Image (tube, rainbow, N blue to C red):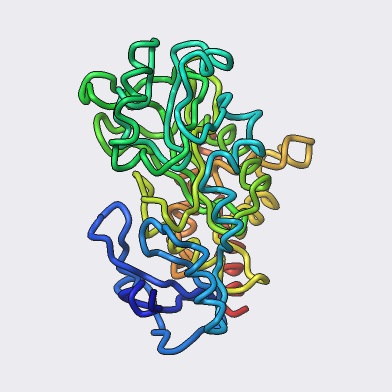
Length: 370
């Protein structure tokens, strides 16, 4: 393996370098040069390197090659394996995800039935076979024996260990449009960079469009924040879903470097990562807005003992609509609009939001100069 063979472009944005191999998959590729002020890396870089080269089969070799050239990966091999293989991440997150057991290969039926009752959900230790229902949701012994017959012939499953999971029905969005696939559920993908939330979106790109209800976001963020702190991987994708009984569970985690966007806005994702990477002394856009909104605390909720995340939904809504080039007037209109929709509109007209809007604007300008 030669270093130049594994990438098409090598660039730096902020204080992060990105090694890029185009995949021709719109769910994965991103035109960094057309969006950011990028610097080409001609020889080496002192910034950590984020890999955006598709699925990575020989991670250790790539890490050794990068290290030999005097550079460092953002995500080490140990961190990559920690979040990429279910046998590694499951023990850390087992209280918030379905019961799982990983076998070197699909066991005999009697061995399976010692640990599980049908139906079960079965996948490779790294991924499913394109969400094919007959290779994922196994309802009885006959279906299981058929899966054992075809497992080693499947181009995606044959090289993976077999992960058998307790089947937990999820809240279904669409069960009929794609009968050969697992039902499209109320599932979402969250991205984290250095254990900080960056952005999220619906998991499924097929079928009926859906979005996370605003009053559910705070609950889901508690779950994903917990998972990110447990795993401590520099770039992480966390998939969560709502069960038919109304609980939120973790479905999957993976190295964010290999993860597609699903319905996540890639511009928002990379903009937030760019901002977060600039300096450890700088705050992310969300942190700036949250700090200012929490200090404003117009109903004195925080000052009267409400949870510290009480106004996070409003801060996130503002964050999604501004950037570090937004003018004071633009910020003021957005703050007014968000709080007018969330609370009593007559209390949050633009002239009543000047103080917090000015503070956000000033903090954004200071943050750019750090």
